[in-house]
Length: 422
Ligand SMILES: [Zn+2]
Image 1: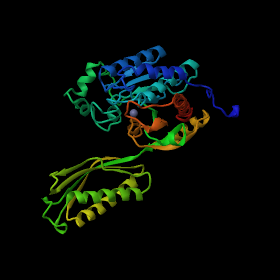
Image 2: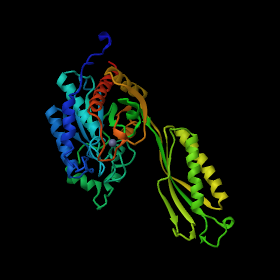
Image 3: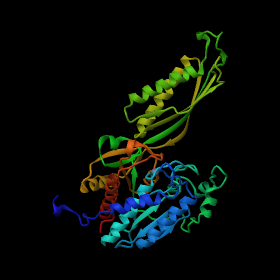
Image 4: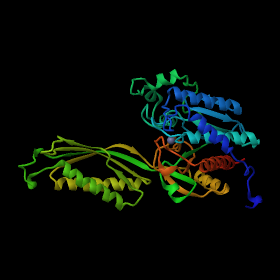
């Protein structure tokens, strides 16, 4: 590479062994026998890992702020105190049988990037920050991405505080109990741009042997509740022509949904995951069926078109079977398109650090999806073994872990040059 073309700081790199050591060390907070982590939001183990992060912040000379949702921000000053911070982050909570990387990797890699900047003496113009978002998983307190959701105004803090876990403890109580209800009102923290590094949680990068995914957005998701009503009848005496079989109609509808989804290309995901049949008796023609539908596509227009076709075709299928159909949309999460400039910074950071890369759309939700509504945002993915996540066997390769952290560091440095030019 032509040295003259390199921006200042191009030789900066994160300390790979210490990042890997941090991942191993923090995995002990809630570590499971199968090598995973059970670290539910606002539990004792979550407090331990938060305390650990606070200790690291102090060692780094960073200023730690905790907001009223328990989000932790670690701040390193830039050379221009008037500029708002560039923020890296993810989450340290896990699913009950979670892995060592989902979320955790993004926080610890961000920490390694802060350390690299501090150690090198390379001074950014913008302050740079690391955030640990409270309760991304939504496993103990629903919904997922709760605190980035409050931060960006998707729902209120009062709603979040009132949410109860399975034992009736509210989020607000649990936050107080672990001592992480901070003074700064959630949402008032300035953010110039946001970058989140994460394992892919899918199989594409690994399958293609590519190290870095430049995430262009998060696909649109819609959930539906379908109800088919026919008539219960005797299985032995009712001729086929006189049946109004709700389950048979549901079977036709399911096949039709799959055919429609396939006709809209490989990016369309349609899943019927729950089906309930009434009365559920061997010798009774089923009268009622309730089924779920999870529909996803990167494009809002396409998902709308798929929904429309499914509605039309499902009604036709139901009518042919003499069954009535209702199809209710119960959740609508529009597609998120990350900031094109920030995505380009990720591609360039991958190129600069010698990593293979491709554009990719996230199939899962992330805190970055909410952040994308309020500031320029992008995400970076690295491969994970067999695309497996939300599983104790979740695994990422050391080389990819270090590579992704360096891409994060260089993306943040590019953002520093790009935003608020002097
Ligand atoms: Zn995550």
